[in-house]
Image 1 (cartoon, rainbow, N blue to C red):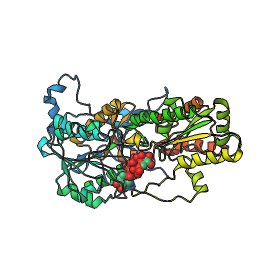
Image 2 (cartoon, rainbow, N blue to C red):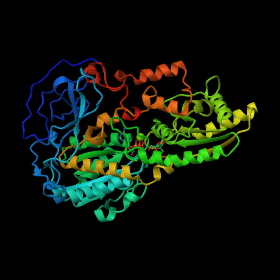
Image 3 (tube, rainbow, N blue to C red):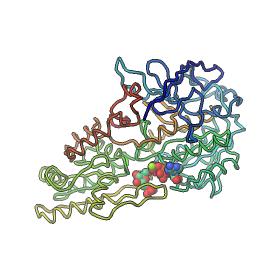
Image 4 (cartoon, rainbow, N blue to C red):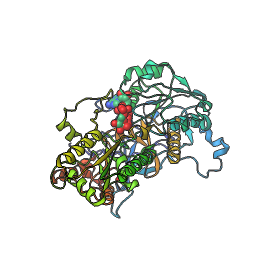
Length: 533
Ligand SMILES: Nc1ncnc2c1ncn2[C@@H]1O[C@H](COP(=O)(O)OP(=O)(O)OP(=O)(O)O)[C@@H](O)[C@H]1O
Ligand SMILES: O=P(O)(O)OC[C@H]1O[C@](O)(CO)[C@@H](O)[C@@H]1O
Ligand SMILES: [Mg+2]
């Protein structure tokens, strides 16, 4: 992509534009259209151009839209939190508008400052009066521990911190906007829901009809939309935001990232992930007990992870009973020297038993080769997977039956839905609470078109495009995967070609940042994901 001419503008943002930055703006990076801080104009494809603000020493702010980008002169009000006795003890409760959070915190002395996101939290002035707000909450995609906690805390946050009384629940995911009645949500009705798995609102895949959804938002007088869901959901939230902006509505759209697979880019990790990893231990323990108690016992455990093997990797690292972990990012082969079946034989000879953890998305190409071609999709367009657990178990059984080298005793455990249907654990409850509150603070402050997330432990407002442009994956040339290999002592199973391919994929210049962003990139680690370090 060619670079655009440098049109640096030395601009001072007026102090009363409270959400704007006092910075020199704005030279574009790469093909990103240039925008001044607080701009939020439409790009050539009718999409809002990213708000990029440049500062000194390579400082870049990837900012989020604000209602005043397309509705200038909106009135502001003092934040009601300033009179809340619970918060009066906090020394500096309101977030300074110039606070930003660095995406990369490992830097060299001569590093450029790199990409930053706007820090989340309550602002001194808000863009909604309490009795003016009609908020709605929707949950989309697969289940995840903590969904109910996020719902509860959005409702209670709006009520307790901002005095908002109108909160609607959209039933059954995106399609619920136009095909179901809403339910009223209040602190009393959501009081105990964080102790339950699932989502009290129901969820679904598919059914995203932008026009109908925004019509429904408009018809119901909704002016704050809280959208909880994974990468697909955030893409849906992004087009809802675009349409709302096109119609010039004073409606804030806030995304709260949800994914059991931990496949959402930029953020440290997604809520519910820790709970899922913890729950997976129960299945791994059972597999270990079964395997240990049998002659040449093999326990196979299948865990979730459609495109990303984080649950399998973390569950394996936590357990230490696992002999082999297979994930989508690391191709493996069955037959031949240094391949999986040979390794299983070796481990059984050494230890008399073994445990294999396989992520559901692993080995899909191999299965497709040996079964039928796989191009089926679910209602949201996600690839429908073939059951790698059953397939692998059968392949192992066939191999040992054929070779007659040793009798084996294989037990296959599939806790797939159990690990995501449980209520969230204590730490995920706290994390979900903070995410919900950050989303509420952001919407009240007039920010819109953002996903809230923890970046290096600090809650931040991240523009939708940064969340949706790529998925978070285990980088098998990073340290975390090396730790796993050294803990299981499994070979990498990679051919030289696999290894070269994955090295190429993990090169920072190939991930998100193009040539013209080298200045920003010089502080980047080899992977986008903190979970890899
Ligand atoms: N590109 C897109 N544009 C608009 N809507 C989308 C898009 N992709 C997905 N959606 C909608 O988002 C919702 C959820 O998507 P999906 O089923 O892929 O789950 P998800 O949010 O990615 O969660 P997870 O994969 O973690 O379960 C669906 O209603 C789907 O129609
Ligand atoms: O069966 P469902 O509800 O479509 O969900 C299964 C998928 O959802 C995920 O958990 C993502 O949320 C994937 O790991 C899995 O493939
Ligand atoms: Mg998804």
